[in-house]
Length: 421
Ligand code: GUN
Ligand code: FE
Image (cartoon, rainbow, N blue to C red; front, side):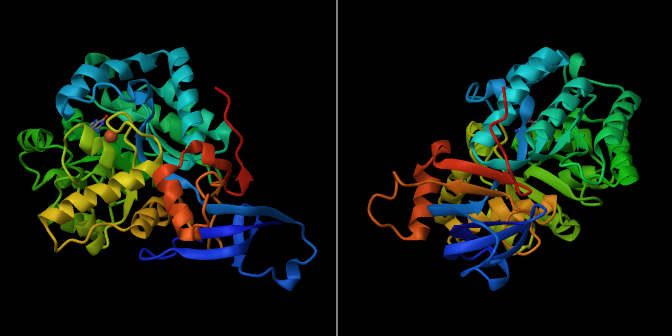
């Protein structure tokens, strides 16, 4: 058992922060045993690690990111989705046939997630099995939690990124056998890239894998208007874009994350609600690729779970703290168009990034009994130069701070040291 003392800030509910000044948190076997305003008598003989005047907050979760787009971070930001994929993204992903290249990039990618306090990640790799295995091993070595998807695709893409369905299934199954073990912190996730790059046969095979191994699913949905029009042409029998996944068991039959959902409404929205499909909201990507503004308030009103994603390299910024700020700012632009839909507040966006997103990994993202102890220790001394309240200190760290303010990181109770690159 370990006991930590510090200022605890977290969001048990969506509407407000819970703030415990000089609080205590007891951790046993990686899990939180309790959170206290004063140290209970039963723990009197256990040494306390005192974090002083620092802030202890839940760690961040990135619900949608492309690890093999790391090199493209911050370039090619002046195209929309489809030309961006063809001209920059696919050519970069082809390079991951080379595991040496993949290792060089993936190590830096995981180190950067660590730097920005992201302890759980839902990642796309590429179609390449050896490079995908390597990414999973790098997460494992780091001790950071992840769902990693070997990407499946077989149409409308360069030949070097297309696989035969049987080959994709076999390579997925090999990874599933290696990594789908009960206590692994790194697990596989079934990852058809998106409808335009998967034939119905590929989608069907992906749905069967998800069902057979009871694995989660991730993909992209209703991101860009040209993409949506193309899906209508490719899959005329589907009632909407989401239906093209749903008919193959890829839309909430097992836990599912759909990135973007910028243009989701009507029956697609209803089905997401019914099937509890999680939205990975990626505001920076939606800004850069000029995709639009996702109706996050509408998702929340419908109890559709939402998490945040950096979507590197559609998105340029790996810090989920900065994504929180972008999510709030975009919601304020939407509010000016429609005052019926309130903008996101800081506790709401923080809740989305922590407890809501964390639910995809189990009990993750809050400081409550039985939750995994995933936490960040924030030293904001430089920002706290004039006796700010604890809430204002957290707000200033989120808006003004950066990785230099994060001085300790914990995942499942273990302190995570900087991964070697
Ligand atoms: N849709 C299909 N592939 C991708 C991708 O790599 N990034 C984004 N943002 N959307 C996609
Ligand atoms: Fe994406």
